[in-house]
Length: 219
Length: 242
Image 1 (spheres, rainbow over the protein chains, first blue to last red):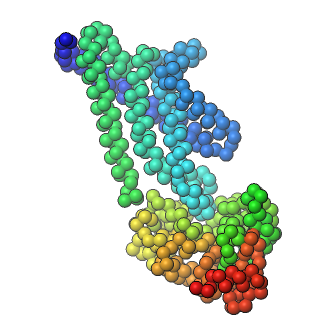
Image 2: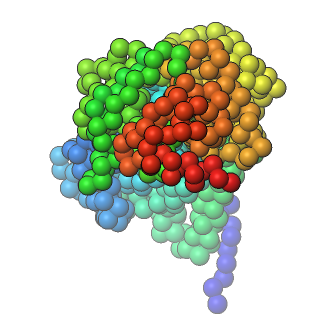
Image 3: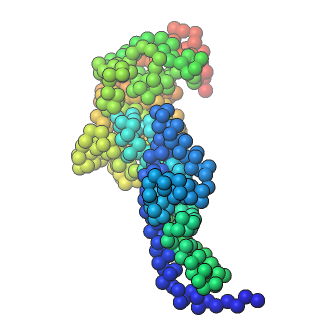
């Protein structure tokens, strides 16, 4: 029978904290890059310009069809032969490109979910297509995409564990290393699962709060 | 003020407008009536280019609306449009709905836009609704906000595409009253409507359409008592006999 020794957690708390902070840092930077990528390609996906449409569609379909683990390894080793990104920026680029494709689809469906009459009303008042998008369509699309976007953020925090395969320091890699030296795998992985849950659940609560505040007009 | 010359339009194989020509002099109010599928909505939407046309010409205040060289965004500021389904911006208050376009399109200051917006909403009986969101307003109130929103751009022409068709019966009057008031003030208007009593009362001319063509044009007194065409007689016998 396995003898649990939870002291490994408290003795190495600094390793977990450092890992968790790195995970949050990687996720936050990736999301900040993924959002503009998602908006640009999401708009591209509904563009009347065929070239822009096909480029956007190709990006989204390819990225959605490749597992993140494979994408990360590909960026690190294959792309790495041309640009030396290192494991830190390699992870961020991989996560951002990956999440960007999903966000693009969320943005597209959010924009297309705004009733057609909204664009017509805005245009009938003399707004250009760009102004109508900026002041009328996107603010409404934003409210619609918040829930799926929140899921995407949470997914990204969890997916960031995969960057441990290209040796980027974060919670999962720190945990692997700790297991290798302490042989306390059951305790360490149990605690790591708890830490991921705390991070994602806190994010859920924060987003829920913002959703409530934004829904003032839907009361 | 509005001239429509030989306009044709089809959706695929289906010709929705066939060689339509019409003039609306300044300060006139024209009612477009006819059975559904007659092309009334398509025609009124073609006047501000919400609907593209295949050929022909539409001019408003001397500006050719479907000409590629025309800045349609500038042209549209002169043409107010009111939709059947209101199409208010749901995330903005009544006042913000009215002030958005004057600020973003005409570059009015917030103060100036709000001053004008409050005047317009008040004149339409909505003085206590400035801060209300559309979903807190009745259909009739929403449509009046939509009218104020269109008027805020100070257009010379107003177009109404079945403005009361989506309303509960008890709210029709308040919207018609608003349009009536505009007519008194000399606004040039085209109204697609099924409200025959209203058309008879305020319109200078009735334009009767069927199957994409203008079948008959007449003064209301003549049209509702003694229309020339069989098609109009059939239509009137159906809508007036109940």
